[in-house]
Length: 439
Image 1: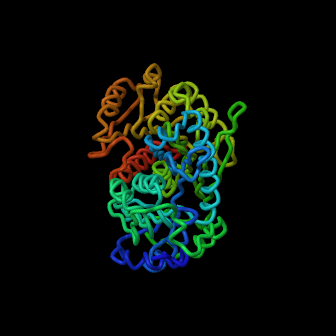
Image 2: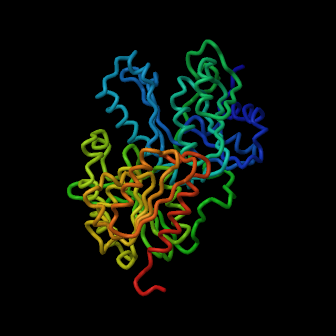
Image 3: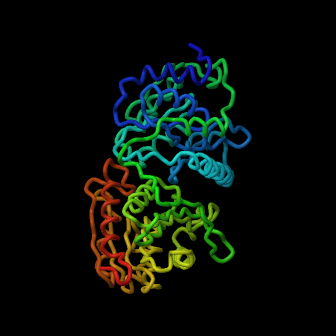
């Protein structure tokens, strides 16, 4: 079987996927080539279409050979056997990853400008590509979908090597292909027309796709909600951030993520979307540059991270309409340590704090100085971090509460876990972020 083009492949694959129709489905195309295939499937199954952005890490001097992949939310998959066999050094790997991350963030800016991310919480995520070679990109995409709260992940492609199927089934609940050849050289050999898809084609398909009518999708505020990419000046650096302001904000929550994540983290974006729906403005911020992220000395430098977070707080309070808003901090992993440092150093500026899977122990010397009401949220199966949070709760100087999400691990990837985090954070900030003079 040879496909005429990606449209033909998508139509054929859609027939094999008919059993998913009506299954609370979101079809996620891998840009760029997977989106034309996914568009045909979304059309046939009457499901919303979105992209899931990942980048393959190609071996230097042989970029068609994948040694791993990166994706939204800091997901990173590395094939150590390929790295060793190709003799790739750590420095080369870091250089490739830096370049691909820049392209990943560029694509996010392009595609998210025309299609707001479709929420995956509690839904079936159908990840689609135009073909699978090494499987590294597909594996990363499945992990991104899972981390975004999908209850089930299905991976579909017109063609994939037979020897990759078992490995793919480790990250997907179901793998659907039309061809599984034992001799596989390149995806293009199975297409008559395998011309490269463009960003413009992807954007057109996203714009014309069926809208997502699921009630859990963040509503577009007709009265003026805005989301902007911002640059926060901190010393000589400009830290990238994502600022969302509803029409009538009741407070402001600044997010500080942990190592290996970013402002595009699907986990933090999911929580932020829930807070925006509750009327809070949110700022998701990258506290370290890509180069600094590779240095553990920076990753665990709570004074450095906290200082930058404090500067961001001062900057955002200087924006029009922000000065009077009560401020909360939401910290994840090491970002929670930085948030606690800020709460200790600026007690009059921080009204409340939420930590998700946080490392409050990193703020040890400052814990007793924290006066802001603090909610510590930890997964029940994240045993080491749970112990650290229990110990930290005894040392906090202000009111605090520890909430354990049963069955959740450190990243809260389990179905419903992030929903619980969002509800806890929303209720905590609703109680404690009260403007002066409010009832």
